[in-house]
Image (tube, rainbow, N blue to C red):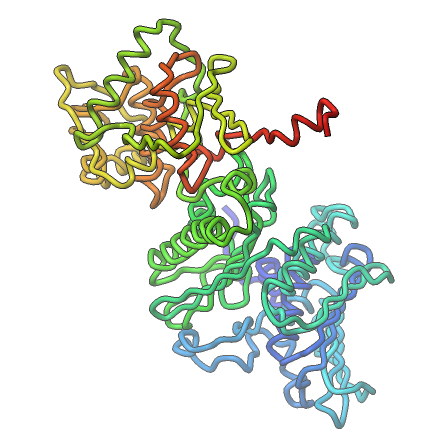
Length: 577
C-alpha cells in the first residue's frame, strides 16, 4: 500500500476547484452571482467556444478597491460572512469565497474593476505564481473573464461536451438568473452574436414571458400568484390551461434567488394544478420562494443547487393549495361573469380539484341488457350516498327541455331554445356523482369476505399507515401492517374487481393533498352509467337536466360532456339561410 503524503498546494487547489467549477456553465453561474451581489443593474455574459475558450461577465455594480482585489482570487476570501454564525443571516447569492479562486485554479482569470475612480486589473492562473495587479481603465463596475478552461488539466477537459452543448448549458444558467431577478437587465452574447437582451421588468410574470415563451399569444395566459407563511413568501408564475407541455422542462423552483433541484416543491406545483390540464400534459411556470435565512440552509451542496427548509411541509402546502384555489376561482369567475359559457369553459379548462384517470376506469364495458340498466338506475335513485335520490327530482313544466332520444348508445339528445344538446351520459353522470361525493358523507358497507392484498414497497405501507383514518372517512376500511393488508369495507357505490379495487386504493398515494378529490373521481368513474346502458326517457331527461345545470360541464378528468348544435348552424349547413 502506498504511503500517505500531503499533496502539493497547487495540486490540492486544482482538485478542490473541481467541486465548484466542473464546466463552463459553473463559471457563468458563479460570475453572475458575484455581479448580482455587487448590485449590478445590467449584467452582460459573453461566451465563446461554449465557454471553454472564454466566459466573461460584466456588471455596473459597486466595483472593488485595490486592497479588495488583491484578496479576491484567494481561497475563502469573502466579503459576505465573517463566521459560521453569519450563514444564518446572509442574503447574498455567494458567501464561501471559493468561486474566483477555483476559476483561477483551472483557467486563466482576469478581473477588471473600478469603484468609479481608479480601475485595476488582476491576472491569476493555474500556476503557483501570485496574482498580478496593474492599473487599468474602466467605468464603475467589474468584468471577470475566464479563458482556456481546463487547458492545464487535459483529463478533465476530455469530459466536457461539444461546444454547442456547453453553450446551451451556459445559456440555461443565464436564463435561470434572469428569471430570478426580473428587476435587473441581462444580455447574453454567444460567439460574437447577441442572443438575448432582457430589459428590467416589474414582475416575475413579464420576465418569464419574455425569456421562456416564444409564442406571442401565450403570455396573455400567464398568471402570477402571491402567498406567504411563517418566515417565507411565495410568488408563483403559472400558465393557464391554454398553455401546456408534454414535459416538465419549463417548470422551475427558485429559493432566495437560486434555482434549486427540489422534487417535493415541483411535486407541489403539479399537485396544485392537478386536473386543470389535459391528461398527460403539464403546466409551465416557476415558483419563487423568499425564505428568511435562518429557516434555510444552502450550504449542503457545492454549487448550492439544493437546500433544506425548516418549514418544508408548510411551504409545500402553501404552493399546492394556492394553485388549487386559484384554478378553481379562475374557472368559476369566468363562468359567473359571463365571459365564457359553461360549455366553452369546460372545453378550455379542465376542472379544478380533479385527478388523473385511474387505471381500469375507461368507460368501455357496455351493458346490453335493458333490464340490467333499468335495475341499476332504480338502485341509484333509491340509494343515494346518504339515503336520498341519486337524481334530484327537478322536473319543471316551463323549462322547455325536450327529450329527443339517444345516439350511438352513448349520447342523450335533448332540445331547448333552438339548441340541441348531445350529452355523454357516462361523463355527465360521472360529474354529477363526483359533485355529490365531495359534498356528502360517503356511505360504506362491510364486506362479508375481506379482500386480502400485499404491498410491494415500504412507500405503500407508509401511505396506508399514514392515511388509514382518511381512507375510513372515504368509505374504505383497511387493516394490517408490514406488507399484509385487508380491505374490510368499501363504499356502497363501489363496483370493481378485487384487483382493480386494490390498485385504485394504492394509486391514491400519488394524489398528494387531493386524496378526497382523487377518490371521488375514481368512485364516480366506477359507479357512473356506461356506454350502451339504456335509460328510459324520464331518467334520461332527468340526467340531462341535472347535467346542464352544473357550473362545470366536464367530467372529473377534464373531458367535456356536452356539445351544442344550434338551429342556425344546421340551417346554414343545408343552405336555408
